[in-house]
Image (cartoon, rainbow, N blue to C red):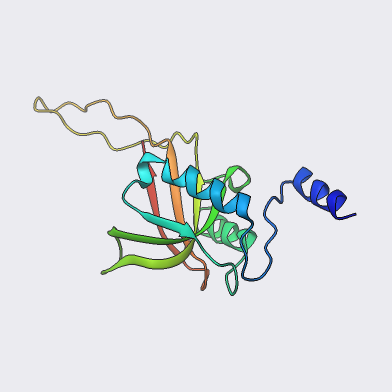
Length: 150
C-alpha cells in the first residue's frame, strides 16, 4: 500500500514528503546539485533546511501570488526549502545570513530589462530577464526580495 500511495503522490506532483527532522536523501542531493550548478546562485552558500516549524511550499507560493499577482506563474515554479547565506545580497541594511527560506525559481521569463545608453545617446540592446528568484522567509512567510537574471 505504501508504494501505491507514493506513486499516487508523485503522479499529482507532490514529490516531497517530509518526516519531521528528516529530509529525503534523494531530494537533498537533487536540490543541492541543481542549485549549486545554477551560475546565478554561484556566490550563495546553500543547504537543505529542516522543514520543522517552516511554512509549506504552497504557503510560500501564495506569498508570491499575493506580492506579484500574475507576473509569475506559480504553477511553473521550482521551490526549494533551503538555508541560505548570501553576504552580497541585502534585505534592507542586513545581509541574508544563514536564513531558512523558500527559494522560488521561475524560468523561461521574458521580462524587459533596462537598456544602457550608449555614448551616442541611443539605447543598447538589452536581453530580457529570463530567470527570477523570489526569496520567502520560511519561518515568517514574509517576502524578502526578488532577483531577476538574464
